[in-house]
Length: 479
Image 1 (cartoon, rainbow, N blue to C red):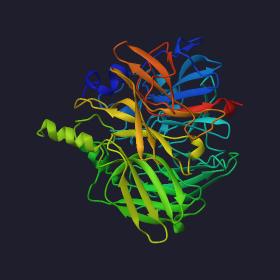
Image 2 (image 1 turned 180 degrees about the horizontal axis):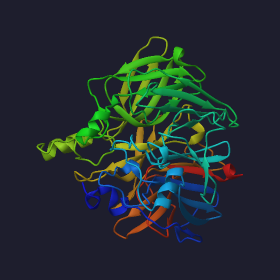
Image 3 (image 1 turned 90 degrees about the vertical axis):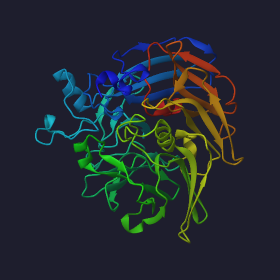
């Protein structure tokens, strides 16, 4: 499709081009005095007009941050200045091919087959904020100004790609990560970074083929890999298709390894074919390992609904059914390490994704989770979210905070109260867009009263495009 027709370049998906700073933002309601920290959101924001095969994954990473302190708020946004970003800015144009195109093997720009766009997610570890892209190294970002410090390779110890979704153990401080390489020869590596960021241990893990492995999970004792049937078939690009293809004839495989184990220690479990972009949490429960996440029946890798994988002869109802199968639903897996049995159960029918929880419960049993709820969209338009669902797993119930008519958002994060008396004592925070008022704002919702209006709405000084993942860095982490 042409640039003008690409839904990821229009409306509130379109990029913004100004980097701004504004303080003393207008607040509707009242920001809690105890809420001190920075909400951060990243996403794709191409600095130059892309080609006609632009995919949402291709845009240069841009950070949007709202600093909350003393009942006041300030906003700033910055591009992540990667090496490739700098080369393109110097050239004044796009240089690299994108996700759905063949790399320039014969003459790669500046010797790089792909540009690290650092646009996918964020993690805070060992006093540093890292901007992440799963096909390359992280980039360190300074707080609160959001300036790019540079690539982080831990003094050259990082020898593989680095996932967009590392897991930081809240008790040990270790950061677990993986890196996948669909072109091989070793398709998967597993790594652990020490709490002080001094030691990186990386081991190869054998899987039978190249796949897209976007997320994983940890418990206090184990790491869980998701070898799901979204396989890499590079020749599809020659037919104008995306290189990753969901093969429903293959099983889903789940590999469980002790935290400091290696390939010889992996226990593999097989289940029905599915995909999962994002896990919520996992924990050890006796002989069982429990995993929660948003499961889909199939996927076309976040391409616009009704994209070219849908034959033009299909009926409207068939296309809608296919799109519904690509929406995540909260799901539970139980892996019995003693018997080898796998049990699965469906938790909720509401279509959700981008699940989050209290970061202090990562890898431990948790009662609550929060996930963005998909809004029904027309075929050919990107997915958007119209609310946040709070799950109570102990009571097997849920409650939804609805944004309201014409109001849509991305991932929401949980910010714990500094004197929390319960796991859900805190706030759910996200940036949304009011399409009717043409206004972007940050909202703060009382996590224990999700069905009520936000306690505060912070009006932002410029449009914030829909993006990918968010993060909360509390005031104590700044210190």
